[in-house]
Length: 425
Image (cartoon, rainbow, N blue to C red):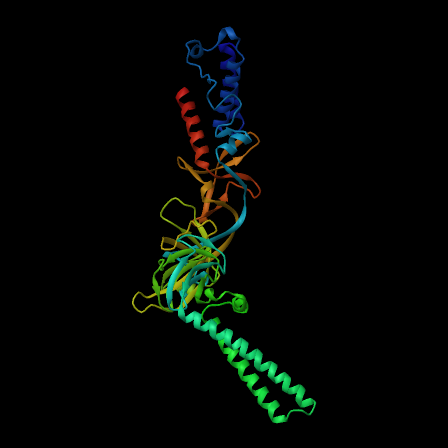
């Protein structure tokens, strides 16, 4: 286009602005003229390229730059394989609840409902140790064997009473038959029946004594078939399944009755012992969710409150609160110090995203929306939030899919692409 044509176009546009009563703002007119001029420059023949490009100052993207022709700024092209390899999690946007949480210190402790302190029931000497520290075992497994005169006497008394009771029962049965034939007097029958009942009572007492010493019903029933040498041996068994966390016995050591021998704990669940200040305990209820975190980088766990003491400690003015925490992989070790965040109040919101989905780029808070080509950066406005999730009040719709983990990878890629783009300019 000639200089005269350009001048004419500008003059006509300005005249239209003046004569039209400012129907179109001036900046719109200027922008239209600029677009017209850019179109004219683009339409120039190749031989008449602008002087800037002829001088080597044109903007040309290299093959390694992210902003190729036609690609939107803030977008990243990634295949499914690349997304999976980068560990980027993707999930749908939806509603949920935001909780107000009370953060208190806590200590991991064994679940007292799944803890067994196994004691020796008799005085004797340790002759076998079947389990070591850390061993896993099932309920009823033998932990150790003790030889004891006390258990030998108790077993012998039981076997003697077993024979005495059988003899008295047979005598009573014989006297009954004789009495029915009018051969024996009724007094003899009554005497035999009384002796049989007394023998049965003494047998029951002997059986109860063995049970108190730790023998199961099956072991007691099997005693008549056992060799005499085994009568002095007493097996110490675990009442629960779990792991041996303490062993107090040594081979050949003398033990007394009721001496603690082993501690067995089932650590598939643990307790979190917390001390909640008196001003906060009024909001604590059994069944509330608790998020447990450690000082290291391990992931958080979530448990539920099973006990909240109605009484405050007179010295610390705190209340004891206990939460139960699943521990299937054993990562929560008793004795560890943790921070517990108790959800005391929950509010429902329409759009909720994980905190890990949010990134800050400059002055903007952004998320990365999944597209057919990969991801696209989108600015959002954040409302209420807690330690885990945040409400989105503008910028996302329910059902959209966004990156929810490892989003720093996407932030870094966009940052590099924009830096390269700005350097090329």
